[in-house]
Image 1 (spheres, rainbow, N blue to C red):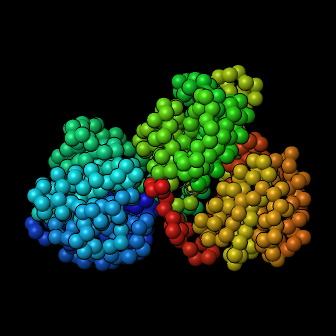
Image 2 (cartoon, rainbow, N blue to C red):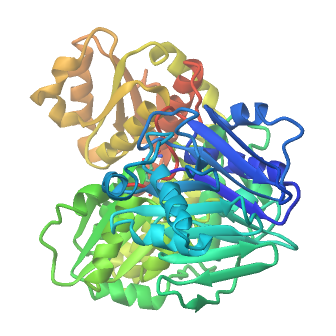
Image 3 (cartoon, protein in one colour):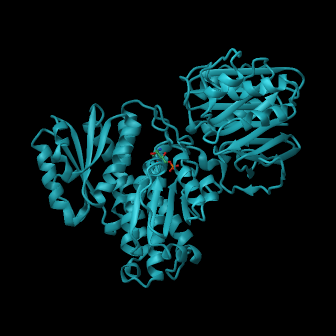
Length: 605
Ligand code: AGP
């Protein structure tokens, strides 16, 4: 998952591309590069290890161009280095290319076609530009060489490619398969980007590219052809989101801003999905299709998978349909025995996660119906599923997902209620979603307003520890798993989310003097048991922290949660956990928004 941008026809190529890269830095940030050409024989290639700021510092004032490509990398093949940074260049110095994705047969291609080429990098990506150079050298046109190189990439490969031919620098060659790529339509020039956010400062009109398509992009021409060479006409879609929505707005980090935005997102979802009379704005065809199924399969990755764990509780309670939750990367290659009439729900903030896409492709081939719940309209998983529901959470920039997680749970609750109401299910009819999500929003607000208490707890218990545990039972176990991911991915503290009742079956051996063990207690039915488990770890030296619902609180509990519906407690319990992660990372001096080794959208399997 890397970020790529390109432009043709604007004489401010450097500032346009660097601005765009910065908006995509969440997609990968271990190295970066840019190539610009002024179409009068002057061109510049600058690449560096490290962040985009590092690249920017190496761009001198004389560097300029009217066409260019740029790239920020999350390394897959080859260490982060200037040599492995994109753009890559053909051996004869004619073609410049950036790539997002993976070329799964790059070694075979090297052996078969490029044995005599002196490669400058360890990357899989460089193989593509070297193939183009080879085929052009054999007499093919730039376009034909580009198409021939792409035709050799095997089915497992994923790519978003931008290429410039320095001998004819008025055309940007573009190709896309599995990795996201959009054409931005501007006035007198055109742009390309991995995510619309990169170019909202110059356009709100984008053309999505579909797998297998190839584009010749010029300042006043957009020529799309499909994999068979047929011309494609596609109208742009409009992105209404304001460019400022992806700014920090006075916050030091996006993560804290996005944690604070969660009450507003709950209220936005009420507005988007709940009518004044309490009926829900959920497509009847979607309801009917789910009702016709005999089992729901929720498929997702990471935090979205954790939101699915809560969705499982909500759907079985209110929709009364047996529901399973699966990690996408496992389901894709180790599929369970499916029910006769399955329905698939894909939870995905980005709408581009390769692991989830792999499953959706498989289910589409089997003609099973599906719903994608996502934060990104027109994303790949949104387009390729039977139905879509949007999170309306606004851009989530921090790599650690917060508001998308709570929005996913809220949308699952709305969906479950809609199905239950259609069945005249009493539990669903009694579940007043407007009232309950309003209580959640108010509860979240109380918690974010008291974030300083969490900051103090992080300083006291987390800033120095090597490891930590979150424990819970039933729905609190679901929350504990997500809470653990938040802490580990931004603070690098080895953290496990654990079933409280399971600790004593082995893992309690890891409890030492001072090990932080954070209990989540909101479920009255199991509260006493979790308290016992707290005692067991405290007796072995653990530092016990309690995140507990008001009605179950004991004196001395550090974090007391406002009361909300029992099936919505993860929406409030996760807030202190998100804040603990944020402050632990900040107090340790780490880059909260861009943790090491991670990227926001994982578009490789
Ligand atoms: C969550 O904090 C992580 N950034 C990661 O686990 C993320 O949830 C996962 O990669 C899934 O992404 P998606 O929701 O965009 O599919």
